[in-house]
Image (tube, helix red, strand yellow):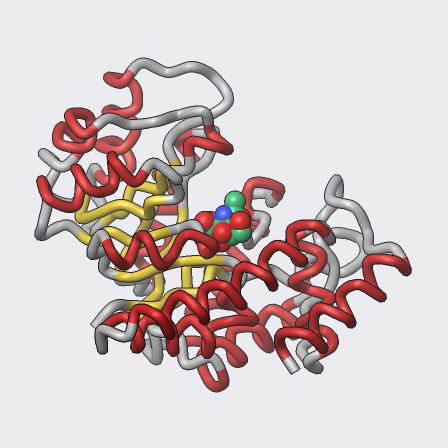
Length: 289
Ligand code: SI3
């Protein structure tokens, strides 16, 4: 069975502080209504790279306190400060997170040796399993098949959150590492990723769209490719509309339409305008009502 994970959003108050009640509501919605298999906590969708270390700890605590062991939890601990990543890896492991993940180090240009040291350092002394978070479009860091192989020499590195449109590389990685966990990260490219036998997916739009995506995965498993393609088309219409309306605030605005208090995005992300609100209402009515 392929696994469906929502990339958890963080609800913020207008001043950028964390809105705990709203964040809990989104967790509950994902578990109770979306019936996801797991949550990816502290990823891009959680606006994690805009948070202080204290706020990151707060989100990790809220998520596991609310979700308990009802669903699988993956904590993204990668950061520009390696010491912070190491601290957070230990922190979430002590909280009981069964898996961690870390984005490839970004902003500065690192050699592969530095990237490898970063992962090995994060895992040193931490009894947990890690998924490499590969998202070259945002980090500028693309890993080759040989580099993935070297990283996998550390037995605690169990897989990849693969947010990459390079399907040639995905096919190579899947076939070279059949026992590794590969979770696809681009929601709009789920169907081709399923065809290449990924183990599941993690995404932002699953917060709203999980039931349709589950139906697509079921259709795919049943060999009904026409139905899977049709569902992917509707999802992509919705994703296109969300992206055109600025995806992170739009996801939150549509959640609000559903009665879930998703709060604000964190500055410097913009506050929603009246026009964005009107478009989000339409997206809700067209795709999620
Ligand atoms: O929160 C996370 O780290 C993710 O899961 C990111 C995920 O890959 C999303 N990527 C970004 C940059 O937000 C996708 O779900 C993406 O929003 C979606 O495919 C629309 O492009």
